[in-house]
Length: 429
Image (cartoon, rainbow, N blue to C red; front, side):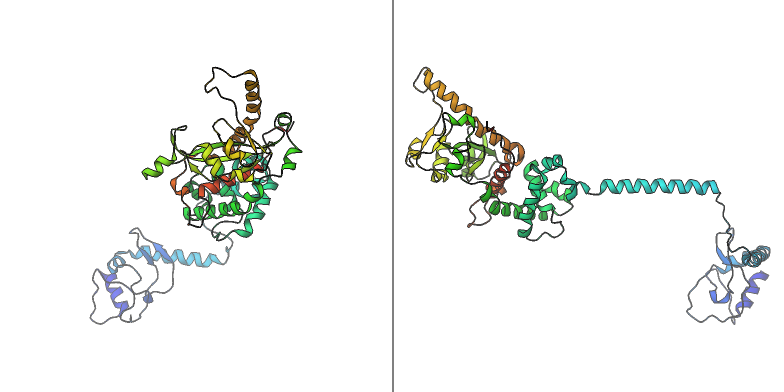
């Protein structure tokens, strides 16, 4: 139409007729106000001026045929509106045009405040503040997570472990000891600790092994020691003073269930008739005061108590005149006699119809004090549930031939040392 020809003349190109794919370069327009037309095409509502378009200029505006369909009255109206706004813009710089009411704005602000509060609450909830050092000053929480009696003991262990730690990338200095004690205490799997502390499982495994090695080398030799005879006898509990005043140790064995080995020989060596399961057995010795003074390496569940006692190195601690209290399964009188020491066990009725009055009374007295070793074992296993098992086979393998202990041996030794840091279950009076 006529308007189309006016646009063609304004562009001023020789022998050029636009098609439906033709575009108009933005250089042909004076700066003006963008207006939205019913066809939803954005258009600058000003009169074009003559300007030859260089070849290859990018296309920036709408179709030529749409321009030609725009009514002249709409264009004139847009120009008038722009002029009106330009005239009043200097007078009302502080004003703005909006369709929002004040009530609606207030409701949006209130909703925004609520969302900010909810976001802050969620962030606080998701923040791992429960694992921060300051939160463990609460003794109840510390006992639940680590089994230790108080915060001072925990910080003393931090001071012991921290200088000896190796690579602790991606984890704070406070957390290696914490996750190690949590795993022993609650028997938590590596995968769970990985999610809890936000690090990879390999990092958790490496840190756990590192801390266990440090505690085994530095804490166990200090906390699990054979006491001096004079120290033991000067502070005997009342139950030992009359009949067992020369007692140096009360011994017993406990077993930890393990996963069933694939190797048939290992399966046979670790099968326990008593537990009807594959187990690892440990010999433990306590002082009359209830302090763990000896813990052996792990033996297959098939091994007898007497065999473990004779071959675990326990007898090397005995001095002439020492008294050892044990269960009836410890038939080690001959081995103990070689050290000029004695072992007392409850009498049993083999070949007899019933026990005599003296034997019965002696057995009752012995049982009353020998029960303390079972209480200490129960304390250690209740505090550190990893001693219940089942334990994976991977913890029964030594990291190298030079290693003296398996990973499970180290864990048991550390658990015994940690138990000694807690109040004794044996009453002194």
